[in-house]
Length: 224
Image (tube, rainbow, N blue to C red):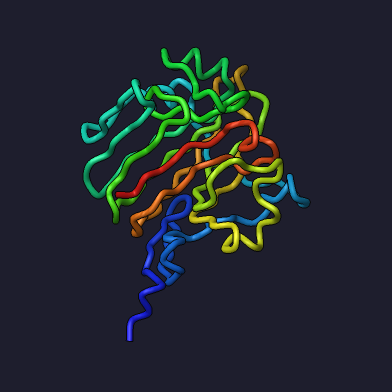
């Protein structure tokens, strides 16, 4: 008999590594947590993703997909189709202001995400859609990552109380922390992965580096 509390999920983490497994339906993804990424919680931070020119990353972010409807008036992006191309840049408020002509949400006081010209937007996707993610850290001073969770804000200083109990914390997808960009060289770090959201629910994306989500580095994902 099929266990309705679980779903089959396929996740590509980084480049060329794909897994398929059963997880609780509320957690429709795999916590792709590469080793050596636990510096805020003890250990080292070794992986850096792949290098990308900062100008290329900005150009990618501005290339809005044809099936994406960007709505600045309510800070929302609605995606159609089953394959969602998502380019996410991490930066500070000043950097976000330089990249967009839109104001950040009132709850954001420091670092933020920029997605297709909006700051920490609400993302609306269809159930069963696969997010094809390209995450780039354009911040010149801080480490950042992009996690997806069922846990809503407000977040504590330590948004992730250790990496081993991800399931209890509602983590749907996890990725490594990327180091700061080098503005002197014009180079940043990019981390690509994909995750399929198979359950109709409300999720949240956030940076799990200590203090970042607490200060407003998060946004909502509505899976319809």
